[in-house]
Image (cartoon, rainbow, N blue to C red):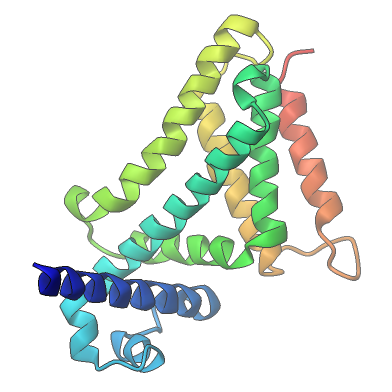
Length: 215
């Protein structure tokens, strides 16, 4: 029994090494050009070992996305408890979530870059619901959080509920994420010659709050 536990621990640890290495490579170089052989070389493993843990590159890419967003969700939960978000108004909670996205730009460009690359890669692949389940299961947690926020707004009236929950969620979650990804990779031209996008990002936040929050 102890032997099997050690073997399972070793497999888990090696999978983690592969995922972390692949994440860095995918964030820095995009996903399409990074082969499983490149991942194996950077892990100091044989490519056969990589395929032992992940049957296809697509499986590895989805595993990376699921793990990184799971980690981010865990961090979000810590903030949620520390700041007592349950006691906030819906408008304050919406600002809390937007600020957490901005934190990604300030502190975790790799995740923003990977997420942009992930969307492009998955969009070009034929994927099934079963294949996407590890990723979708964690994204559903974010969606459920927003659903609770919207229900709060129906009670306290601090956010417009004449706009559908889905519309607000997608506009903020995906449009904000897309903009931050472009800022992080300098795709968007800034009025600031030093390419400090903080002012533009804060203006984007203010526009969201101005439009969605009630006076």
